[in-house]
Image (cartoon, rainbow, N blue to C red; front, side, top):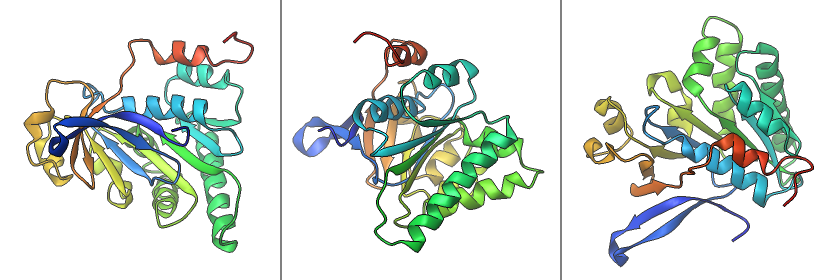
Length: 237
């Protein structure tokens, strides 16, 4: 269906089959957890591409926090109103937090407010938080993201993290989790994975919570920048 983004295939033992795992705006904030080799971060790429392809600016307002300058440039070429945030630029981060704060205020003061839903994609939450740990911006990142996950805020935050402690309070406040392989099995168990070794060795294999299903995430053989280039302004279909 056009109102969702397929993230991968989820094992369905009862039917001896697999079914598509969908995410759609309003589906709730999500912690994507796993090492840099786990492939868990593919979920953010799939969401970015899927949201661009399936939703207009009237439906979804995208805020993308991305460390790669090359990827930021590729996103900027898309004919969409996307706030692109360089995590090393404090002004960029502060402006994005201001936008989220303003949306939280608007929604709280006008129950049933319409307008596009805000989706925030953070490619490395641990890195973002560490950069501003000793600055006023650090506590504000945690405060705004935690409030954005509370109830019907009109905002979905999806953030990838490689360390549980480094993810801060967002790890507990996110309503959903995708948990991939990590060398720290204690952290995997803390996130609900009963058999951490089952995630080893296959890129994109995750457990999805709160239901606990085993998921194989969609991955692309083509680099993300090339996929985005196909969607840039002026490119032929």
